[in-house]
Picture 1 (cartoon, rainbow, N blue to C red):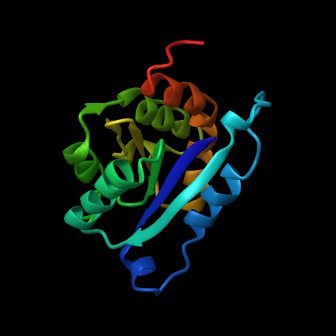
Picture 2: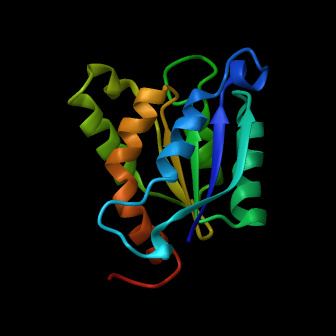
Length: 168
């Protein structure tokens, strides 16, 4: 079982002015079996789900809590990866991570470019804190779905590597 936390970063969702459709999108996707995987170990369990405002200190606090206290395998953030003045999710992620994993964000942008040129404006990042992989996804439900589809199949291997299980 891959233990997951979901963090939606959105001023409007945190103030209950908008429904968190992106959060529901990721929940629905993680409920589906992985392609080509038949083992229970490759299923996702959502342990935590939180919405926070676009405030770097709040984002950092939640990421640290998920990694250090809850000890989830993967944290997915949604939102705050654009060019807006309050978009600070990549900075918060980098501030709490010990190592960065640029390939995940690079491939999401690269594949996203095949659908829209706007993908090059995403500043999403990915990194490691302890044994937790933190991955920034864009904020829109469509971009969340497209980005997660690109990387979902490699996440069980990433988790195994983080836990010292080596290559399979």
